[in-house]
Image (cartoon, rainbow over all chains, first blue to last red; front, side, top):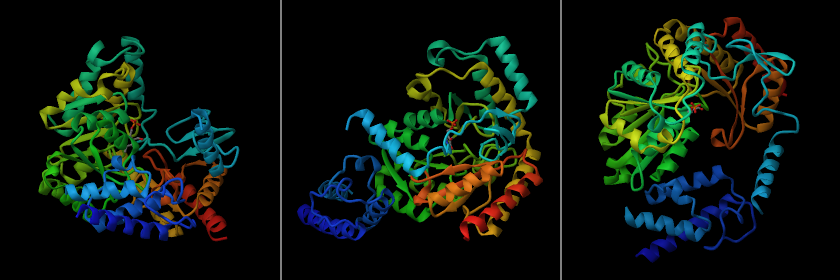
Length: 84
Length: 396
Ligand SMILES: Cc1ncc(COP(=O)(O)O)c(C=O)c1O
């Protein structure tokens, strides 16, 4: 259940991120959100809000401080989703 | 990259935004003549970028009180109240703030920044939640970080978004502190306090309101948004600063909850810093008295605010949603904002320039702060100057 949930999240993230970035990098779970994708902070915050609504969760800002990669963001979402 | 190289990289990013020689940030002010005029370089400028909302920086009552305190009690307290003692003035000012808001107790802090840091980190901690507006001031955000609580932001003044997030909290709403501001410092708009109070009661949270920009400005006696909306009994904690309408430096928190007093024993930003100097406290006490009796000042302030807001709107500038002492022209690019800011200075008008990421939504702001000492003629001159620049810069 959790695994399915995680894969679904990864898929959604990769899809949304590729539409936000101009860069040619193909996005995988290991892609670094900050150093590899040139997405500005306003766009990233908007993406976070979209994800929050998609999963009906709130992601605390302090938890985002530890997030670097797509995988880390997906794990965080999955963790919050299963706790709610 | 070592630590110093990181600072160099940040400096390079800053310089890329602002051409060499443009000192928009921390501009040197050589002499201050009055609540509305000062000298910048060789120019005598109209000050339209201060938070001196009631125009009391040179009020004789405040200056005399500060002089007397200096003579009687010296230049500083040299330590914290916890370790070195509370002067009569500190305690008197706390009683006066509590009385002003009709609250049981009040605490004075050394700055408004510390009032938020100290109140927030004293009220919540690890395992608790803070629900803050997306446009919150840095002192609120930093207080939340210091507290260790989980920080959740809702879209600025968006009650549907706020409720969605309260609902998602479930049982954790009970240990949640909602934090909003009376007037927001970027766009000058007010929090929808009645709706916020309704949600706070529905979800049984605690509410903190920062009246930094609304103290002296809103309400019959200048309490702020609580007084304008008549919701004094519904807001759990009110913080504010002495640095704006009270024209000195310091901050406060008032509450009807007797537990407020406990903050004196747990809140590091209260304990581990020196208390405000006697002169600071004395001028603040005198200013608070003038603020309470300052209906005529508020009237003049609002006349000025409405005049300038309506004029800028008429010209075609995109502004915040409602008039107030903070009037921000919202520009699409930093370049436009910088041009307008520079050209205003050439016309001897000093306003604030706010560039991303400090301004919301990646926008740039040319922000005016209006005060009660400005004259109708000055407001007309500012309006005319903005009109010329609109045609020269935005329509060319
Ligand atoms: C909303 C808000 N809260 C708190 C503060 C901090 O006040 P002080 O200048 O007294 O540190 C400010 C001032 O910049 C503010 O705008």
